[in-house]
Every structure is written in structure tokens, then in C-alpha cells.
Image (cartoon, rainbow, N blue to C red; front, side):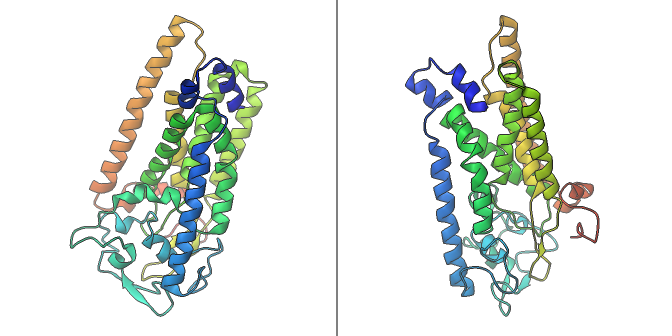
Length: 334
């Protein structure tokens, strides 16, 4: 649907215009990043074998995603708040049991890896970015690739590589920022789901912008709503309790999903081509884009600032945890 509308708008564009604005024949970004994520997954499995003696995690708990243990995922760059800022309940020197095997121990600083913190406070802010390219296992990778190489590739061909790349990375980044700010401090997070939710958010804007050009646009909006709601409901289900002195929880990260979705909506206003019906509509379009750009910058600046400057991230919005879990059977207990 999106590709068709962009194709109509870009029929007479030059080759360079098609590269930047679409439509394109080949989704290079989707292909390259999909391959890069596969290479990273292979590295994760090799790293897991080196640290635990097994290619996939089987002890102290089996990883149903057929992949590394949580400690290895943290070690290779998953989003994990104690590696990014000081957490009173889990300081760099806190001893963790069942670290890589059921008999090993390590400190938070050791499991965070990347040379540690050099005697300073945890400062691995690159973990806002690296989780986009990590996956919890083979199953996780395959599930995400169904969207990444399906919807994502089609959308990239319609948008052009630069705009699609900006949308994908901004949504993925903000998903991890919001997850870091509101999510469980003891919950590692990884995957490109935040970026993929950004694509869905963009499609809402694209559908609204091309309402008169789409056959049965109401049906398209309904399909997007249903798929979004189902995905968010799945994000309320509990993850798996894991090892360490403090339990580590691994499950779907609704905060990353919501963050990516919100940025997809905002970035959609900035990036989506809109039909020019009148001079007034042109002014409305550019005012909307300028306003959305301001909103996007404010979202990043405020959320990152709150994350790093709050005394305890878990208390920024205690009730927000119910956006990522159901309040039954102690599922939401940290």
C-alpha cells in the first residue's frame, strides 16, 4: 500500500531523487542490516560457547529463543541499565551468582564488559544503539526478520534509503531510550522491535496523508490498529526469571515498542511525502514538519536527561510498569 502511493508520487523522479525519496527497486538497507544482524547473532552464539561451553543457553536456564544466556547478551551489548548508569540496587561491584554457568560468579562491571568502567560510574551509553542489532536467539531473529525483510523492505523501496534509514534508527534508538527510562533496571533488552514498531507508526501517518489515494483506507487503518494492539498485548505477558543475586527478567519490551511507535508517528509527519493540493496545504505541511521536528528533539533530550539525572530510574513512573506487564501473579514485581 505505502509503496504504491510513493510510486505514484515518484514516477517522474530522476535516479538521484529516487535514491533519496523513492521509489527504489532494491531495499539495500534492509538487506544489509538483516545480514549484519545475522552476523551479530552468530557472534553471540560463538561468545556464548566461549563463556559457557555451550552454543546456546541450557544452564542455569534454557533460552527458549535458542540463543545465548542473558549474561552473554549483556556482555555483547544488550540494553542493561546497570551498565549505563548507577543503580543503587545493582552497583558495579555487586556480585552476581550463576553468571555464565551455574557455578560461576562475576560482578556487574565484569558482565557489562567492554573494558569495564575504569573506576568511574557506569557509562555505556552506546547501549541505546547496539541492542537494535542484537537478538535473544535464532527464534527471535527469524520473527523480527519476517517484518524487517517484508514490511520493512517494501517500505524502504517506497521511501528511499536515507529517509527509511533515518526512520528505522530513530525509532530503534528512542525505543531503547524509553525502555531505559521506564523499564525494569534488571531486565536486559535487545532486538529491532522498537524500530519495526516505528515503521507501523509511520504507516499510520502515510495512510492518513494519502487517504484519498488508497482503496478502502479505513480497512488499512483497522489492520494497522489490530496488529499494533495484538503486539502490545503480547508485550504484557511475563518473561523468564533468570539468574544473578537480583532476578533478571527477559521478556518482550513494550516500552521499546511504544517508544518506537511514537517516534514512527512523529517522524512520519517529517518524512512522509504529502500531496500538494493548494498553497495553504503547503504551509500546513511545513508547519507540521517543523513542529514534529521540535517534538522529536524534545522527546530525546527530555527522556535522556531524565534517565541520567533521576535518583532512581525505577521511580520515574512506578505505575508505568503496567504498560509492559499484567498486574496478576506478581508478574510486575521487580
